[in-house]
Length: 163
Image 1: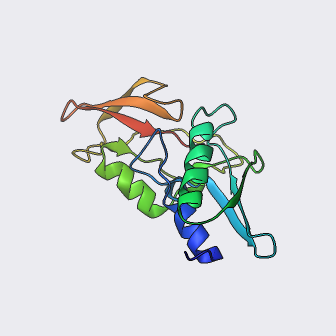
Image 2: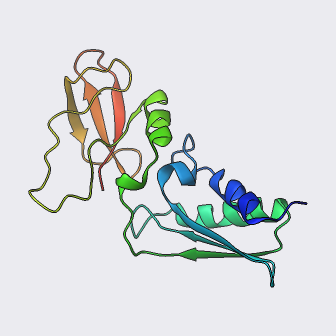
């Protein structure tokens, strides 16, 4: 088995987010770092939750352990860090494209704004690209998303909130 740092990163990067399975944890920006200590043959993975109470982190940790062990890494450490706090700015462009393709409106703009507080005037419908949309509920299928509806195609959709 190949047990190099590049291989460890590739394996960790391929783990899917359990709440939004169209995204990997790398797409989402949850995967922060992967290191390999060749003297002890230990892979250390650092992850950051999308918010401090994210229920998916335990599953992500277990999925990382399983994927890395199946890839031949015998000593795996998963570290969870809350600082710096996760932001939607860490999502990859490919991840945002995957969200749109799966019917979830990706976050727009940047979350790391000092002031004034940004106001979301419209969210583009991921199905028909209309800007004639409205928020139905601040919370969607997960706490990271809000529920919106398009006034043109009438389809409801999740919007990944800026954080």
